Length: 324
Ligand SMILES: NC(=O)C[C@H](N)C(=O)O
Image (cartoon, rainbow, N blue to C red; front, side, top):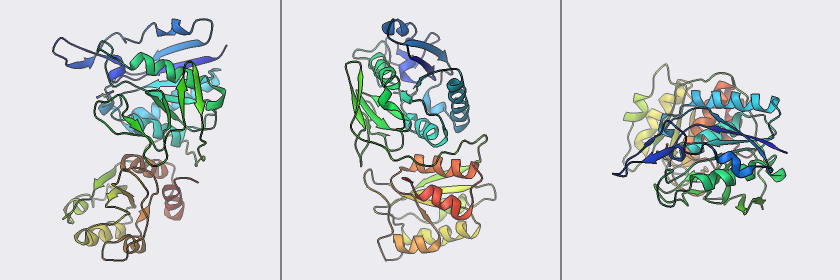
């Protein structure tokens, strides 16, 4: 019988609502006892790794979760499910995807409605995630996110709605598969990318969002000796307002890596526009284009690359080549 380890970290899946509808963490995980639903089919081991709303999750917590998962593989575990708050779920899932050398499936799930709300989705998502982690077909697909019967890659999935249970979507590429009754069905593959099994974190790496009329202020504010890297969610296909350029150049002159993604929900950043602040100029200046990732994930990729000791063209290749 396959052994699945469920690591609970908190989030709405572990919360309940009071009479006024206010949702808060509980001392006793409402998912406790769910293991019996798999009697005679799977061995489920549950562990309370943390009980944090996901805005409280940091890369430090992600790194200790990564170490716990690696240890689980040596304990004969066949698959891992992580329960997590949905606000930063895509970040933890992607951090694990970037750093885990595991060959066993790792599936992250959560809930949009807490345990005692009408139409609560936590238990259903947890069951779907367990079946996915137990699936022979879930190997070699990177870390997976299972919510609302869909299977997504950690690399490209994003939370798209504040409250809807169908919030997790993969805008440009679509999901990898879906969960039907007791079975995970895959219909796409993921191209593997480089794994960096880091043991410490280089910080701080910042994320800025571009907007019409943006000037140098925020960039200059981040131009500190302590700053290790900056990711910009740029406009459209990968362009910036001209007033930001001198400050971007000052960051590059300090050898602070500047990475660019698009603030668009769909598509990739490219150096196509040849006007002041256009992608062609930004690339010539030394800005690194990161294709296909959103801002928070590009930020993690830059942080993981730096934490792995990458510099210069090694770092640029690692960050820019999202599908190598
Ligand atoms: N649905 C959720 O889990 C949202 C919650 N605020 C969290 O991320 O912890």
